[in-house]
Image 1 (cartoon, one colour):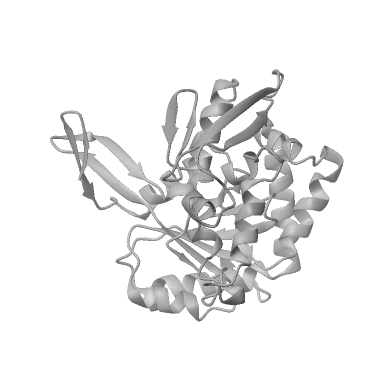
Image 2: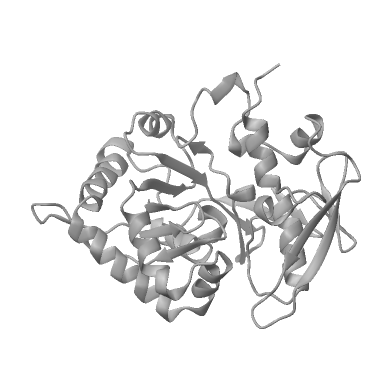
Length: 310
């Protein structure tokens, strides 16, 4: 149950798969990251011409990876529905004709959406280079991206056995008690999947850390950050003036900025860019915030991952 003042929100099932799919399309950055963009449903075909239509495709231009997206309900049969459907999509995704088709769809989305162009610009990717960046990403193996309302054990086991990497995100629906028209949706914190086979089961160098489970408090415990250390972020919105923001590190790993306390670097960074006048809805705080010495939180996290467990 979620409580807001006098209102109580009760977890409830999605009406159907189409409802979940719509929620994902409208909020895809909370799953695939702030530097991603979403491609609409597109018919792709296997070598023998058998067609399949995934719920969409997502391309992350920062991490240089792409996803076949299939929104699913947890009560659907894993073997006769989910696995069967995704297997066909994977076979079709490897066809050269599929990759060229998705490339053209991605370029159309890029050319028609100024906010997508801004994401490329923020990563110093010019319009001249956009097609090559997209093509290079599509030449890599796709990740199977499944937003879902419940993860059956069989689906977890199936994900671990796949040649291709799999990410499963839990997305929950809540309805206000006594007012069924008031609906809210719960997405993962910091874009973290519940199941992620892109990270090894046994972290390298015997460390007990993986990228998805590191918090700022871990960087403090390792001595990479100190309580009351300042973190710096510069941000310049489109057609705006660049601003400098400073956040203070707290003992529990939270950050304070603009008189507010935030539980994650990304929420703190989002507060800053909103203050600067940006209309962006997500931002990666791990790459945005830097120490006074100019080291990003992302780099500190990578360094911590390489440390052997004590």
